[in-house]
Amino acid sequence: MSNTRDRIPTLRLVPHAEWGALHAQGEDERSVDAPAAVREVDWSILMARAQVGEREAYRRLLDEITPYLRSLAVNSHRDPNDVEDTVQDVLLTVHAIRHTYDPARPFGPWLVAIAHRRIVDRLRRQGRARQHETPLEPEHETLAATGANYPETSVDSTAVRTAVERLPPGQREAIKLMKLQEMSLRQASAASGMSIAALKVATHRGLKTLRKLLTGSSTEA
Amino acid sequence: MIRTSDLIEALVTDARPVRRLRAPVQRAALWLLLPALIFGLLALGHGVRPDLAQRLGQPDFIVGTAASMLTGVLAALASLMLNLPDRSRHWALLPVPALLVWMATLGHGCLVNWVDIGPDGVQLDETARCFGTVLMTSLPLALAMFAMLRRGSLLSAGTVALTGSLAVAAMSATAMSIFHSLDATVMILVWNLGTAALIVAMGSWLGHR
Image (cartoon, rainbow over all chains, first blue to last red; front, side, top):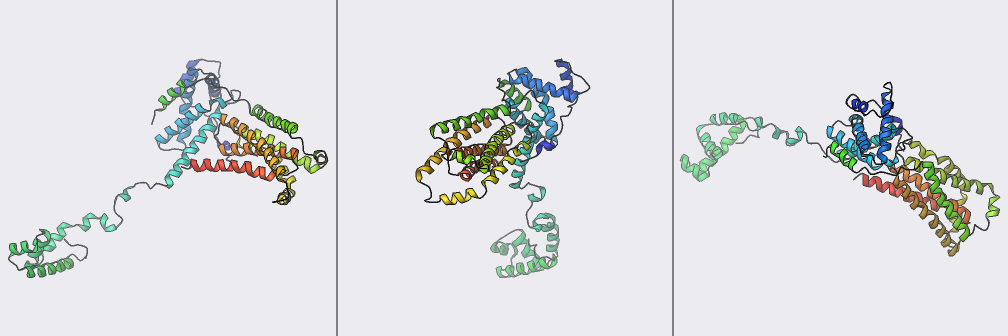
């Protein structure tokens, strides 16, 4: 059993815009000293009329309670879409059970109880949805391995190129042809005039030297 | 997402006149006519239990039966109160004192009886007739109760269903204690409240989807 009733806020005055409309309707005597109470009586009368099928009264009631419902929903939801969804949930519920309102009783608690219930329902639904979801955040857009997330250190091409330039001539030639230009052994042999065996040895040694020069085992062009 | 102003327009277009719900006390009285009717029919068709006069001399029987009937009345009222959105949730506690008294009079005697009845303690026809009484009271009462509750608001469906079922169970048990010497209170309670608990559990499970 929930004790939501205990936490229900009292009916508050909804400011300016609707207030004008309220005065314009000139329906019965009302004291400006007790606007919230007057508003509630108004809503009560409007709902009583809506119950007998007066569409104008119903439209005015829904128009007037909407900003009030929004002010209630804003307290629990930050996303404007959630706020609007909640307001619409409440309006639908009010419509579905409008026959349960007894005009002899105050309108405020009736409306607030429905609103509160719907706000809590949406919060619960969101809580459940969140249990099954992982929000996509900037850190999820990279790979798990830290090395992959620093492209400037992993593929520092200028460092590789200067290191290649510092290789002994034979090794440099072999690395350039075999690794940078990605030639086959036969093509590289034809281009450089070196034998295939010599190319293999030079490439192997060149890579070894490069590894030493770059002081890391991860960089291999 | 539909715009709120459009929604309001749609709702206004759909605003047919509605029949206001009667006050909970009136609705409870209306529902209580049904057990009264059933009790009357049972008394005519089946007759009260043979040892009723003798049992009426026993205070624990009187207290127990009165408490179960009171539990039924109060639970029905509580359920119909909770059926309105603006009534306090504390109405659910209304039948609790009567329920406690009723449970206290059951004591262990009914459990012992239940065990005594066992596989061969009671003839089949008595058990069958007894089940008949339980069905005849429980079923229409439950159907009527849920039909009434469906008319109202089910914003707090769990407590509404539980108190409603308690009302049905209490009335069925009252019928049993007046019309049968067999004490089936525990069975009736388990049956009715079990069903209600099942409905509530299913509701919350489906609600979690």
